[in-house]
Structures are given as structure tokens and as C-alpha cells.
Length: 245
Image (cartoon, rainbow, N blue to C red):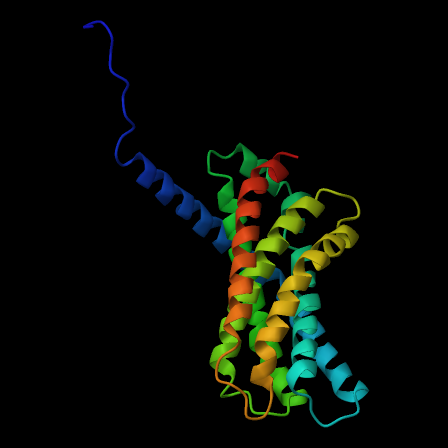
């Protein structure tokens, strides 16, 4: 019929424009987060100092010259886990205390941009932490040389860091609006992070022995990747509702 207009299709470039807008927002938020951390030094120094102090305590408490294998991997990953919790607890505190959530909700931007920016921020914190913690671990505790194991260890660290960042962002967004956020955050995060610690320790344990293999066990890397994927989808699906509440 001549009087009926055909439904209009969205412009071909609309989706591309939305994607560009999303990543512009992510870049702006990420830049803000990193600048705030550089000015205040609230999270990364505390995380690094905690890890160094823990390695020193283990160095003297174990009363042995060096560790390797399962024991070395366990010490490394448990220390990194608890150091990461310090960063998770502070991830949304400034936004909650200074009205950042309200300002973001009023802005005409994709809300998933905050989740991506916070995840990347926590990834940056973890990367700096490990630049300090891993050499300190090798110097204070590890018996075998770390050099040959470094490529495999870096791959394991990358997968574990992604999982910690995704879970940490999700948990921090849930806990920050509560009165007991400093207690609730670790209580929620630790059970969810245990599989990452187990996978990281099992994958890196063969690398931390004398005459070790050059690569970690593939099944543990695949398990870590699958765990990251699952929680990435969960975080993406729930984050908008957490901001509303």
C-alpha cells in the first residue's frame, strides 16, 4: 500500500559509532582511574608492600634456604591473592564517597564502560604488583632460577590476573554500597578466587622446580581461561543492575 512506510533500518554506521563511543568512555575512565592512583598512591604501594612483607615473613618463618615446586607456587599465589584483595577493596571507594556513581549514571554513556575501565584498572594494579612481587619472591625464597620459567609463568599470571580483575570488579561493585564493605568484599571474593589460586599454583608448580618443564600444563591454562570467560559473561550481565542498586 502506498500510504504505509517501510520500517527504516538503522544507519550502517550506528553500531560502529556506538562502539567508538564506548571505547572513548573506557579510555576516559581508565585515564581518570590511573591519574587518581598516581596522585594518591592508595592501592598499588599497599599491595606491593604487603607482598614484600609476606615474602620476608615466609623467608624467616620457614627456616630454610629456598623453596620450590608446590610449596613455592603455593606461597607465591596465596601472597598475590591477599595482596590483590587490598586493591579490590579500594576499587570503587572513591566513586561511592565522592558521588562518582551518580555522575556516571546521569551521563549518556554505555554503563558497561565502567566495568571495562575498572577491570583494566585492576589489571594494571596487578601488573605493577607482580613486577615487584615476582622478583622479590625469586630473590628471597625461590631456589631454582626463574629465567627459564618466565614465559610460562607470564602466561599463567596473565590468565589469573584477568580472572582476579573480573571477579574483583564484580565483587567490589556489590560490596561498596554496604556499610561493611571492607569485610564483605573479601568474604565474597575469596571463595570465588580460590579456583584461580588452585589453577595458578598447579600450572606454575612444574615451572618452579630444578630441571623444570618449559611450559605449564595446558589443562590448567584451559581451566583458567574457561573460568575467566564464565565470570566475564556474569560480570557483563550483572554490572548494570549493581549500578542501579
